[in-house]
Length: 594
Image 1: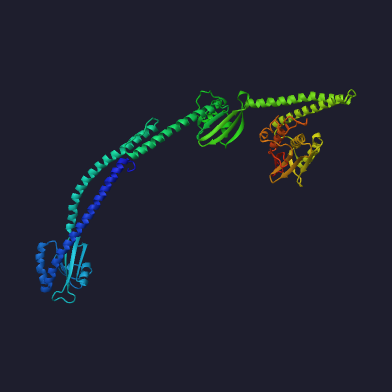
Image 2: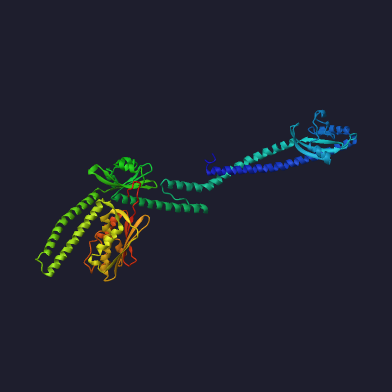
């Protein structure tokens, strides 16, 4: 209940409680002092009468004590006189029959009287059922043996109770008046103090509800500082909300304009956002609302829905509608739900297929006339019709150009084959060291390698790898031939090309280094692209040899197909260094190797 009270009521209640506790403390202090004074005054009175009884007893014995008691009993009818002998027996008592009373030797005041001559005690009497103030004194009464007797006077302290009651009534009356003024003062003070806070609270509620308000400025410096801070915070919050809204609108426009479909869902798989591209892919009208719907209702394929039960990933999904659409679906877990990205790759896949078919058809169409041209040139050269040296050189030049065009067609067909069949279909175990030696032998037959030292640095142990023999040989041959061409075009003498094979526990590394002109940073980004060469820095101006920028692209494609990579860096020889990394095959339990 206290927790549900307002701050004003809590403060008033605490102030009232403090006043009550202070009043009780003051009353207890006054009562304690008054009580002590009453007890002391009563003891002084009893002490005077006790001296009189002692004198009468020493003079006249028990008879003298009885005579004074008759007079004292009339003055203090509630008082009591008791005479106890040395063994604790009651000899005389003004209120009870001594023969029926208990032995009093263990009474504290009696013990003190026998030991010290006098004693006093304030205690609760069980026989009288009230508080009694006891005073005792040892006297020698004529005719009594030994230590004499003890005369004890007692008087009930009813005045203490009457004192408490007499003090309680005016105190309660005063306390009621005090509480009234405390409550009234607390209300006025709290109303004055909390009124600015109420105004601040109203302004805060208005702002929280989406309205516009300013926190009031009062004369109180602390409230002024609080209001200024809240106004500044409100302005910053409005600015942040406005900026967040603008960013949200910009992001919505940006995502809405993307060519890919984007869907955001919450933890319950309810749609939070869906752009027009996603609506189109899912077969929904652009103006048909989707927010709040279950994602299973929107997605056009059960396979797409099953991906939501898996981890983040990407998958190509075929849809049977519209002649078979190809949709690439990606999922990404967010803080609040997941994001689904849908991309329609149907046209792209058809375009790639058309491109591959074109290259294959064009390649075969080119090879037929090229073969006819080569055959005609070979016949022309072997016949007797050519006798002039210039004519023979012209025919040789045409044959070389035919070879270059034929090589270009073969490279294009190989790239298409790698795209269509990236895993290869003729995997076998080959000796990598033997491939390197064969490549060096073939490259040395090239005219451009006559003045170049071609060297192989191979490990002593055999290195066997499972791959497509012809493709790997082609990839390495392109790298070595590339180094020979650019070294020969930039140096007259002392050209060097080195092929180094290394291995560790998991990979095989093939390095092809040369001391040619190297490759600049800007050319490193394009040198592996198709039909692109770094000719500006690896010049071939002094040699007619060269390709069309497909060799390095083919080599990288083959290395990536094998699960490896092909990178370019600066060689220790001063030129370029191509590093091909291939993973080692791991055998499985049935003896097969992946």
